[in-house]
Amino acid sequence: MTKADLSHLMALRRYLLIAHHVKGRLRLRLRLHPEALNAAPPESVRLLQDWLKAQAGIMSLRLNKAALSIVIDYDPVLIPPTDWTRLLEGDEDEAVSLFCRFAATA
Image 1: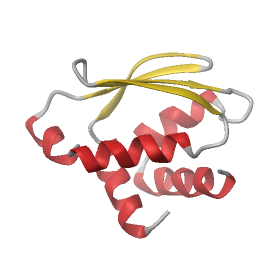
Image 2 (image 1 turned 180 degrees about the horizontal axis):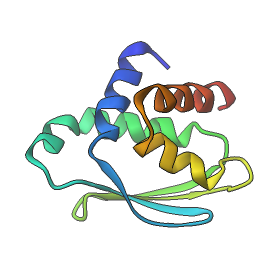
Image 3 (image 1 turned 90 degrees about the vertical axis):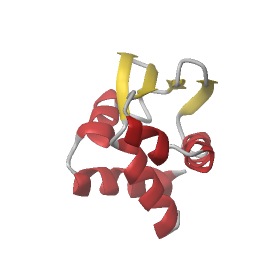
Image 4 (image 1 turned 135 degrees about the horizontal axis):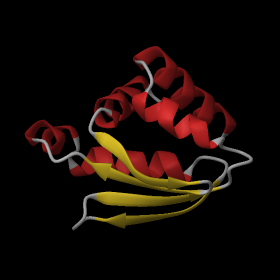
């Protein structure tokens, strides 16, 4: 993961929220906020999708552009459910550490 990729993902994470989460399945939604649309240009969304697809433990992704959401099916043994909350809602250092850890194990 390049520094630019990490920068895009860190900017985007501020506008993502966990809409629904059960062990092994997660729905992320883009917050309806004017700045969110600027933080989520198509290249950032593609970067997020590509990054997710490259992660060990991601079984499938379904993007719903109309609902501004993405459903992620994942293996909770490889990706602990609490990591999602820490990745999206944790402090910046913790999120950077998780992004880098995930990238190292992909």
